[in-house]
Image 1 (cartoon, rainbow, N blue to C red):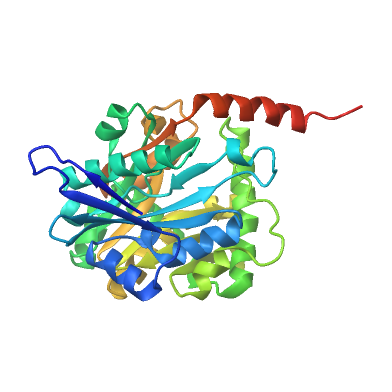
Image 2 (cartoon, helix red, strand yellow):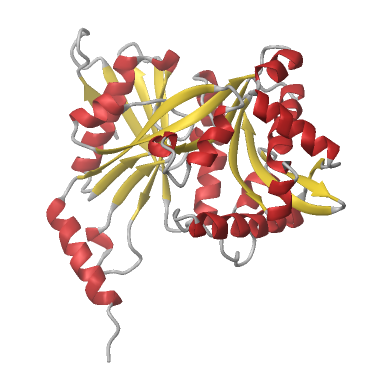
Length: 359
């Protein structure tokens, strides 16, 4: 599949889009690495999504300049309902991270999103959504295309400075939390295999219960049936669970992604004892030290909603916690566009009918 796009200020049809359902893994991942991409663009992320959602079909997009040189990569997923009646009405295309372009070229990024939008319309997708994991704002082009946008914040620490400088850069409150955790004899260590994932899920559910009590969203990880999808990432060597122990009990755990010298703090869980012992602060600080020693250049603390900056937000505590590690605050924008409102409305009506209990 090939599409062409005219770029403002350039010759007509100066960009070309290609999409395939499968790729040669090493070649694709090398292209992603050459553009400075993260794990959210790599073939292993496609494996993880398939393990989590078997009906999702990976879609690999490449953007080329008129001279044939690579200008960008994007990993998307095609999905529709398993119900035969709903299938044509729920065809969706989605991306966990914004399209990746060389040197963050603004013209190329705009062209990429526009071409993906045209591709989705041409192929009968009902909706298109573009996420923003580890990707700074693309709000201008999405707003121009009338996407409904959601703004997020992420926090990025550059690991080039000496460790002493990273320590000095921490907020005073966060340094004190790390010191208190050490005085409480909190110990950080890797939690390997299924055991580590089970401990992580258990602690995530405890965290979810606290968030729900504060009026936040329902985030329970639930019980995993069969092998945990996160094991796909862990087994491939691009993810690791780090745990915090107090008197031998695991009280805090974090799931870290690591690829192309870029770390992403994907998720975590903590129980009451862990919070009391300041284990989350030590867990992240030791995570920073651990991956810096492994050669990482960037450490992304993950995100929160943009309105978390306000004190009445259920995520305000998360915002304050991450801000105090003194990383660069990145503004990220996710967007969703309904491409066929008629089909979308019909699917909602049918879904209500099909899910309605019969007496």
